[in-house]
Length: 116
Image 1 (tube, rainbow, N blue to C red):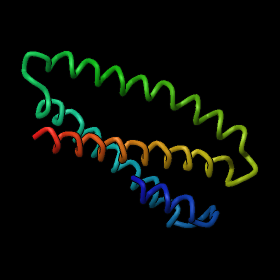
Image 2: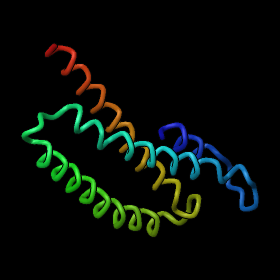
Image 3: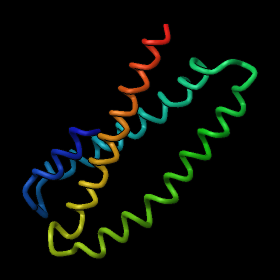
Image 4: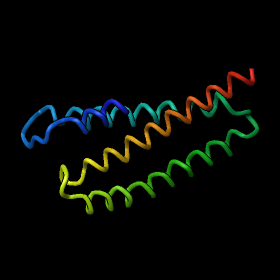
């Protein structure tokens, strides 16, 4: 995901280049894979007696993130039209979110290993 965002940020502005389709395709694949990986991890990491609650909380957080990120993305795109039609800063926002998620995963993994 981070690689796709970095590629789209450094890729030159090109209206008719086929290479410009590669980063969105990479992002779509990475979002699909992240969804496929997320829900089985809940079953692996949670006890059976709290599994329904864990799935519910995860679904709420995923939907809340989707509800918040869309208006923020639209606001950024509309107010930064001068650079790459507004999508440069949208990709920077996604890059920040992806790096934050990666760091949270590293922190979680470190805590999990220290508890073993």
